[in-house]
Every structure is written in structure tokens, then in C-alpha cells.
Length: 444
Image 1 (cartoon, rainbow, N blue to C red):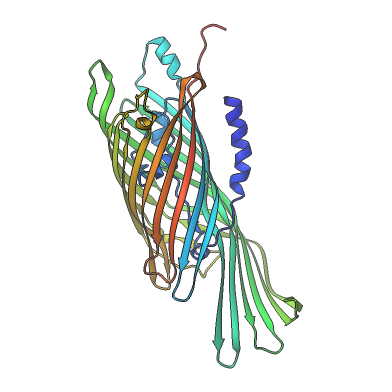
Image 2: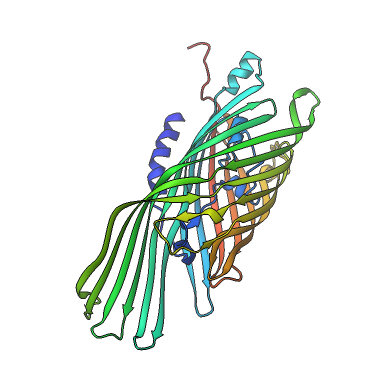
């Protein structure tokens, strides 16, 4: 199992970095379209992650959750997304999809040894690593205008790329309180190209500017979770069966590095095949170092939990995006501070049913209202949607319960903006568990 998970993590990582080209017009602003860091299990009930912890599922958003793990857990997710874009004059539809995340987490104390030793320490420790997309850039937009004394002018805007995050998580728990931290390295490359064709000029000519921006830097965030136990099992005073979890995260303002290459060309004499007879380089900057400022954030969530039966949660997240600066691109949109609110529920009819598998399936639903930080042409972008999800338990060799989690998001971005996006996104996550890691054998 250990060898299989390690090999699979390496093989799938290359596929994750080869994200497909999307076509989202708003991804030209900032670092691209942001990618949320929660996994399929949390996505299914509204992205409830700040107060979420589970013995057999990972939660990258709040690193304190790693201290609650009771098995080594490998998570991999795939997604497919359909986006419909509509403006006052046109509309289009676009599909995209790929690997959504890869993660591995484990407790640093073996639960098997605790049972064999008949001791249970109030201290628990957890650790994990993850590779996830952080933002995605992909757009291809054309406009056409008629200018006085110039004639027809066509503008094309094209971009691609994205940033990714490699995260190392650590957590410690004493009794019912856990704290943790994420250290993440964000990296990637974005390419932006704008071309203006002066169609009616003699001779025909075009101006082209291209920016290649490579990004890398360190990110971090802290998390805390505390369980207020409402009821313990009657035959085990150390086993809670009903509790309320309060969780919070905080992240400071970050300054990460970028290296920019910029070129500006003027081409003349357009031929019948679309090429030009000559091109002059008017500007060329190579390897210019710049800084990108990312915002401080904090979030607070609460969940009411009945063990193996019910979860109900709400959470709030604030992000101070008004400080965002990208020195390598001065033509970005305006940015605003944002607030996001979500709520969700998870219900298990009968987790121990032996003759009715449907009763063991985890049923999830939720909704969210998220403010997007980008303001385009004076219009704010709000993301409103709801989610449904299912968690299918599967029993692997050695009786380890694992899961296949599905989540469907239906939403609308920018209802009052120049371009409205209506989307649905399906995420399928695979959660594989093994509690034999760090097991100390008594006899060989």
C-alpha cells in the first residue's frame, strides 16, 4: 500500500501540472481564476472546511484537522466543468476538466499500537503534503471597433497558464483542541498576449505585446479547531458522540516574487496567409524581477456533529484583496476586499447497516455566496451557487474503509457584470485509508 501510494502520487503530479486550457474571460485579471482548496468531501456540503475534521478524510483548508486523523489517507480528485458565458451581444459554452488535487496525510502515532498497548495519550500529531492548483489562466477574446480616421480595428486578447501550490501541513492536538499550520510554495507561469490589427490602414499593420510572468514564493496559514463535547458514549467516557466544533484560520499578507519577460512588436504588410512581411521589436525586457502582493485572510466556522450521523455547519471568510498588487502587470482590474458565506449539511441514514448499502451513503447539500475580488468595468463579481454530494464507503483489503466522494456545484458568477458565467462543476474524489503506517510490530 505504501509503495503504491508513493508511486501514484508521483505519476499523477505530472498530470496535475498539465492543466487543460480553459476559456474564461475574467482569468486575464489578477493571477487568474482562483481555485478553492477544499476537497470533494467538503465541496459536497457547501465547502464547509474551517470546522471540518474527520478520522478518514483530509482537510487542507484548516491544517489543525490533520491532528484528528486515525489512518494514513491518500486523496485524489478529478473534475469536469461546463461554463456558459453570456454578454449583451454574444454567448458561448466551454468544457474543461483534469485532476483537481493530490494529497497524503497521516497520524504520527499508530492507532493500532494504542489499542495493543491499552494506552491513549491526550496528545495526537498529524502531518501531510498536497499538490493543488492555485489559480488558472485561459482566455481567447476578440473585439472589433471602428475608429474615426483609422477605420476597422480588431483586438485579440489571449492568455494561458496557472499557478500551483505544494503544501506541507503539520498539526498537534491536546485533548479536544488542535492547532496546525500550512507552509506552501506557490509556483507557475502565466502568458498574456494582446494584438491590435489596423485592418483599413495602408499598409496594414499590427501591434503585439506579450508578457511571460513566472511566479514563485512562500505562503502560510495557521488553523485551530476545538470540540465542545456535548455527550460521551455511555460505555466509554473518552468517546464523544455529540459535539460542536469551532474552527478558524488566519493568513498574513504575502509578498511573492515574479520574473517577467516583455516584448512589443510592430508588424507591417499583411499577406494573404495572415503573416506579415516584416516586424520591428520596439521593446524587449528580459528577466525583470517584480513583486506580487497577496492579501491577509481570516475565517471562522462552526459545525454541530452527531458521530456517524449528522453534520451541520456554517462558515465565514474575509480576504483583504484591496492590497493586491502585481507589479508586472499594471493594467489589471480594480480589486476589493471580499466576504464569503456558506452553509451545509451531511447526513448518514445508518453508517453500520449490513444489509442495505444505500443507508451507509453520506448525503450532502449546501450553498454559498462568495464575493470575487475583481471589479471589471465598475461591476463587482459575485459567485452564488449550491452544491449536492454523495460519499460512497468502500471496504478494501484489511477491512480499511475508504470512500468515493462526488460533489456537484451549480452557480452563477457576475450576474450584473459585462459577461455572466453560469456553470456546473462535477468533482469526483477518491479517499484511500490504511492504518498500518508507523505500526511497531512486537514480533517478526
